[in-house]
Length: 371
Image (cartoon, rainbow, N blue to C red; front, side, top):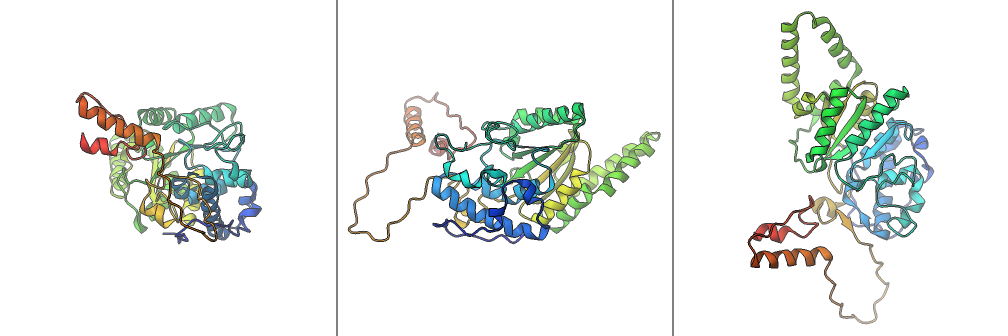
């Protein structure tokens, strides 16, 4: 696994980030040597921790896709190539690398940066998000437009394993496979809800399955065997068995995608090499990356749900005259709702609670345990 510097606390002062400070657009990122990328990622992680500590905001998801974000902007020609983030919680590193670094202090404030990708804010934000599971449909539309316009533009959707469970995502996968769209879907698997299979062997085969040589042999073999249906069927079964031993991607293959992975989503050299291979392929590609939510910040890695989003970190005064008895904190809306739902369910057994995908975040955990 790629060595990642682990922070134990959020920096109170703006960190020294000389390499990051020179990146005002992805074109400048692409001028770096690949050996410089790990240092850039360390600086980006430090800046992100400090920045969110100053303003509050979504936290763990961005840390989890930080290396992937660097690799995507390094390999693909954004904004000419279109990058779509599902939901958008994870887009803070994307915003920092696309000319908005010095405006991050205004995020989620009046007349400031939006907390999600917003088309009116930047040409790098290709689709307005906030809702779950819409990215594949959007990227598919962009891929079909690129085909009609013959631009050669690449379309990439990054979607989490939670959003992947929605019907809309699978409708889009099915449609993309049917149309043989030239697009890439990246599954950001940070919860292991789809079986995990990482390590040296998996990473090696991911390189192999995404390589031009393998895919040229694969396509040539199909043409040769078209006149021999029995041999064609045998070859297909053999390939499926081979992939089934190393990758949990049979479902995506059946939907018409070329499945690659799972690979370590924090290994920058591996990500760059795999994405460079995929960039040269045609048709629907599916890359499965395994990440850790809150990567690089020890408390968030230990409690990814609690650190999904954080409040502004208030500075501690240098000296305290006398300890003041703290005022009781007002309950959050989610706390009030969760308690009300439990009270209602005690009075009426017909009450049903529906969680918006995050039981803890909506404070429905107590309801789920009691009822």
